[in-house]
Length: 201
Length: 198
Image 1 (tube, rainbow over the protein chains, first blue to last red):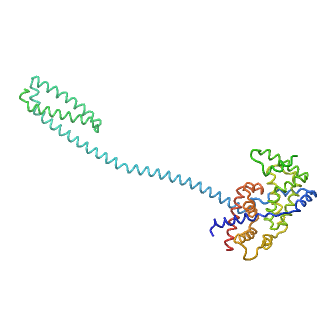
Image 2 (cartoon, chains in turn purple, blue; image 1 turned 90 degrees about the horizontal axis):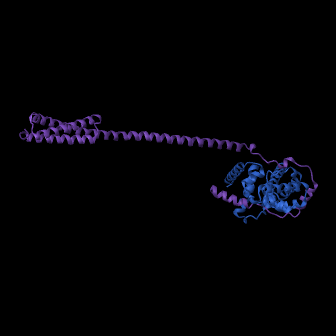
Image 3 (cartoon, rainbow over the protein chains, first blue to last red; image 1 turned 180 degrees about the vertical axis):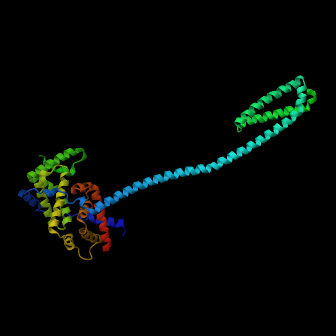
């Protein structure tokens, strides 16, 4: 029989232990006792036993107190452990994120180097064209030549401003795009001048 | 004094009547007991006598002793009523005196009745006609005799008489948690005794 079933049976049996019977002369005996009087018994109303005298109960209370202390300490340790675990997880996640950031940075750097390479190619191409065009253009006095000179001057100023901006922030993609388009425009203008060299003069 | 109201108060007072009203009625009841008012004792006996006899019987193991204990309890109530201060309800106070009286009688007697006496009280059904519940009832009485008195008292008051832990604690002058612990330990002891016997 398991514990619960046994408890149920004992409780049922216990209820049946309640006794009731007729006591026809008991009330008369009570009246007689009351009438007989007597002196008050001070111990009559004292508690029949005290919990202080129960060593087992005292031991159980001490044990229960220790259990409570242990539970509180366990809970505090669990909280501290979870906080530590959270902090560790945050640190580890930060570390795992770092390579991704690094990879992105490397990729950006590679793209930037490609752009710079392209710019350098423009600059070299422009310098070669300028060596071809500049002597003739400087000597020319026609209105068309003056327009070309003015356009190239404006392009040079704009290119200089962009280059200055890029020197302070080489990752400024907007300025880099502007610079590339101006290099392209200057290259195209110089190529036109090479083709139209005679006419300009 | 309005006797009916005063006597009904300990057992039937509702929350609406209020604690102070109940206490005043209990104090009036105690005064009447101190004076030896026979009508008050008769009403108290009609109100609490049956349960008092049952409690005494289960502590002492015989009807004659139980009746003696109830008689002695009322005599003590008469002699000590002037010391009642209303801290606990009058019926609680009455039960404490009864259990004290039972303990006194047990101490005087030193020996608990044997199982055969209890079987005689139970009617001792002939062999073969006992149900398993009868067997358990007899076994339970025998096992209860083996319990420490505080554990036995709390088990009897809670499981047999249907009193709450609050009522038991007040009647025995102990803490409620001690009453719960005693019941827990009593059941544990009884289970062990049952397992050892079967």
